[in-house]
Image 1 (cartoon, helix red, strand yellow):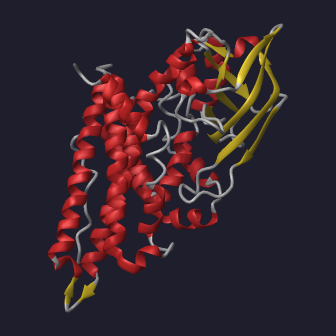
Image 2 (cartoon, rainbow, N blue to C red):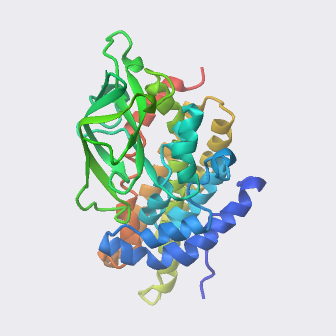
Length: 388
């Protein structure tokens, strides 16, 4: 009998995050893992699991107590991410996206915006999302073309957004749009807005089937003279780029947790398979080549996890946050792709069967290396922000 592996150990998780880590693990084992295969096959939105996550107090609780949340910090959110993504990435992303971007409104928005928009999300009466990427650009935050222009006491928004989580399901979105055209101030031409999804001129549809993360829904938004009240701007005009840069430092650490969880899933699946599969009169794990592959998977995983938790503390303390966030995001998501690739090799021909978990993990790991800034962009950030 093979003893189940314990890769997502309590160390190096700080003491204050251990309780929520355990809650997330128990929830993942009860609600996410048993339903992962079915939701992957159907590609449906997991409304029932999202509701269960809300009932368990594990959705949108990074929002503060002042608006009805629990105020979970970066390390607590990372602990949740590890456990959820090990169980299933698509369902995990649905749970995470329910409040994605609301943190920007909490940090920079007005008190009335907190009450009208954040409180319903923190209390799980509404869900939201963040609209940044566009059909022609994703990583170039200063190259977006969706525009917002003043017309009396309203903003009129025109353009398109793509790959937007909850574009169809959300009650409102935090949306990034161009409000200036100063060639000498490329990063000061953008602002953030709260856009209700029932606003006139807002149109959204689901993006067709994806190869991975199938239980998470992303959408294509078309904004045609979409009108919102003047006061729906978040913070001050022209500060949108800088708001996003700060937000993504935290977000990229959590995405590193996505990679850690997926890497753990790949290792556990491969470990179990090779210890229970026989070839040439012995179990597959007895071959040195197999042992070396598993050793390499552990090296990648443990290095990435250590870096991720180190980065979480540094980013939380605003210690060269952009550098550490980029390091963690890149290392952990690429460790996941490496572990999944080796896991596929160890499974042999059976790896290609969609009924096998390793094939789902293999497809899922191709996505976090792209979102929240593709890893080539992260390498640019690492080089530019490296300690001198």
